[in-house]
Amino acid sequence: MNTDYIDLTDLKNIKVEMMRFLMAYKFALDEMNTKIQILQDEFNYIHDYSPIEHGQLPTT
Image (cartoon, rainbow, N blue to C red; front, top):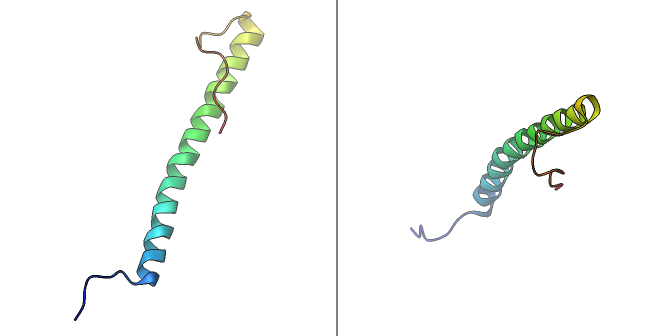
C-alpha cells in the first residue's frame, strides 16, 4: 500500500476548508475597517478632526 500521495478529492476538501477559515477572518477584518472608517468620518464631521492618526485606511 502506497501512502506517499494525496488524493485529489482530499486536497480539494482541504482547500475548501481553508478558504472558509480564511474568509471568516477576511470578513472580520472588513467589518473592523468599516467601523473604523465610520468613526473617522463621524469625528471629522462633528469635531473637524480625526483621532485616527494615519488617515485613510488601506483598501483591499
